[in-house]
Image (cartoon, rainbow, N blue to C red; front, top):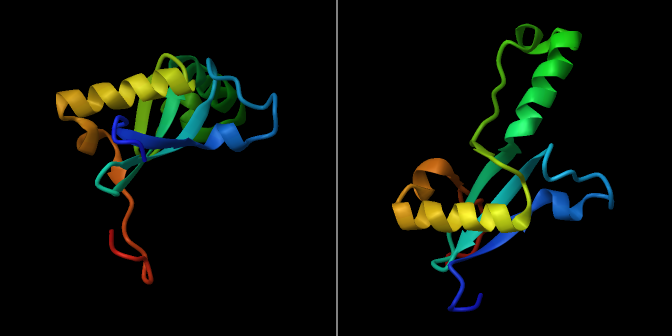
Length: 114
């Protein structure tokens, strides 16, 4: 990791089939690795996608016909693009809210200590 970077970022949608990701109307999983080697995860959902889910579930009956939406470790954002997520993570680090907004990745048996 470059010393000038605050974190390395992995975004699930960057590994999807081309054309499946619509950053303005999607939800993605992210993993951020800080310079100290700790890993953090969250789901980032665009505001528009909340309405997409609500409408879909209203018709399907899920979540009391779209009366609520939930996801573990959810962060809402204007979109799910890399620039937006990077800016969001930098802001969370600066404001001290990073470790409140994301969940730590727990070490697995056999992991090498950093």
